Image 1 (cartoon, one colour):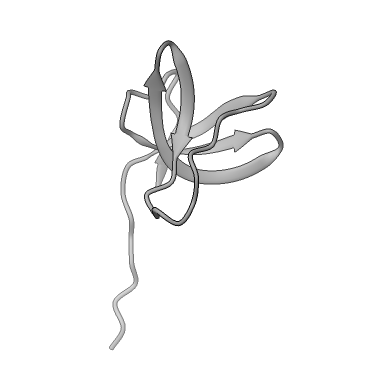
Image 2 (image 1 turned 120 degrees about the horizontal axis):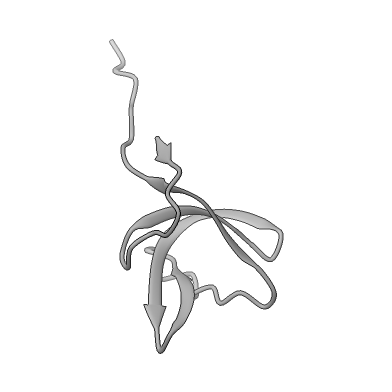
Length: 67
């Protein structure tokens, strides 16, 4: 579940469009620049070459229980 917010806070998980690709990553700021951090250490941090648009902030995960 995502909620649209004007500016995500440092460390929040966001749905983002970065250089034309959609992703769900941790939003961080370093030295005044924004970037996205993958929580899987196998993947690199994402620094926008052209565009970073935050589409929403991740607030909850709803899972369907299996019976």
